[in-house]
Image (cartoon, rainbow, N blue to C red; front, top):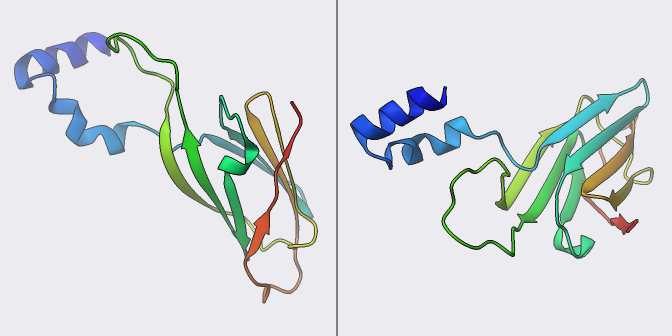
Length: 136
């Protein structure tokens, strides 16, 4: 695959892939979502977070909103290979069902934000801000 990309770079120029970047890179932050009968657990990969208050979480019905930035603060030299996705993000995640605003917890530890949500029976609830507890 890398050789194929190098051939394209040689033929079209090294800026060719930048116009397709939004199609080739997965959205950030990366998430795993697990559903049980009455609970959803979301694991969100946010490395290097110094202050949990830099991430904003909101819930409205069956949508989870995550806003923040993954920063690589100590980078030096010319980029040779890039696999760690970073930068400002706004991510909206559609959940399998609406959740209760009074039964939400979010903790951050070792680069993972873990959000626990519980199923809501009545979906006419307002948008709710979620506080994150740092476990480091």
